[in-house]
Image (cartoon, rainbow, N blue to C red; front, top):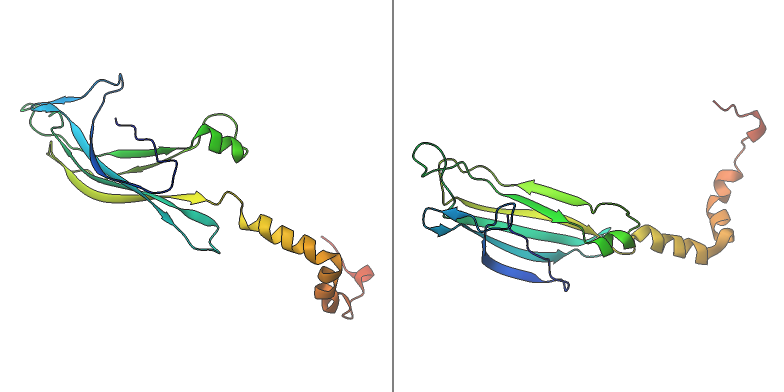
Length: 168
């Protein structure tokens, strides 16, 4: 298990090696010392009018010196799980209470290797702070009800006798 804090400023973290820790936050030991995972992160910004601000792109390159399993102790069926957990402050700004939201992705399994090479990238989309619908509401409010009526007027003035319409 490794934990990497995403940068506050949108940007990137170049491919780096991280020591793999167990559930007690102790370094995992392989036959040749500490097990390591190589990971990179960057943020891609999307242009307007996308409802998404962008996406965190997580690259899981490889691992080395993983502990072996089985009779020989020299191989394992290795995979990595990437979990992106929302910051509590960001969740609160979005109106989310309770536990933080999380998104997960998993690499493919590399069978029989204590030094797997995944070379996989995962994208985790990020919504805009102010959704586009809020901007549209502001435009409608500024235009006023009169403009809305003018737009709907041709539909209202057609030869429909609303009193005779049946509802289900």
